[in-house]
Length: 329
Image (cartoon, rainbow, N blue to C red; front, side, top):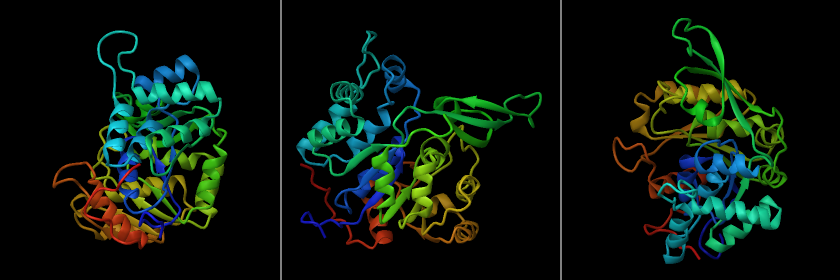
């Protein structure tokens, strides 16, 4: 155990957006220094604008991961709020997020993506580390069936993370452009040295699965010593996973990485219904199924950090998190 009373397990969470934010907010309550490896395919909003105008990685998902690792004391809460603050109005800054500008500015000053993110983490008093999935921006592409109402069986291509996430068709497969982006070396090392790798929750095709499309990262997950925990979403997502059940999410994972072995699948019983099909799907991956109430409230599709932390503690074999929030700086 660390001197903060948290487990010294090396846990790496892969994902992006709100799902990774929820996972990290829980992990920092049970693990001393979790690491996030974050997708870099975002092409919308403030991130998309900075990516286009400056040629940088889209900083939004990286920013959200850093905010999730802030403590719950005054320092952590204040910096987290500032990091997430979005400018209003109709001027040139309208829609930009303070944290995105801070990260992009440090990238420009330091000319080192990882060093800049580490500096932001120190400024925030964040507990843990945030790393990009790749060293250059990537573009999500998807083969989608049903885009043409006149020919619903035809498969067409959709490009861009926002377009893939909101597609009205059924996703057949996803890919990255470039197909083999340069990975972040520190991210590959972190996964290769991890005790546990956490996949999900989050947008399945655009936040969770893209990491397995980066060959060195995929190899580190599949061949490395880490046990793999898959955390399922609380509901399907309009667009990319509309109509998916829990076992459909695992089927998409298997289709992309059939050689992947999973230790544990974690799901909320309210999102599962009859657990038998999911138990069979998990067993096919070599995994056990753990059911735990992790939603904020019945019918609410948001994870509760304290409940999710308790579930992580159960799976990882760490002491239960305290009833109060974890301290920050």
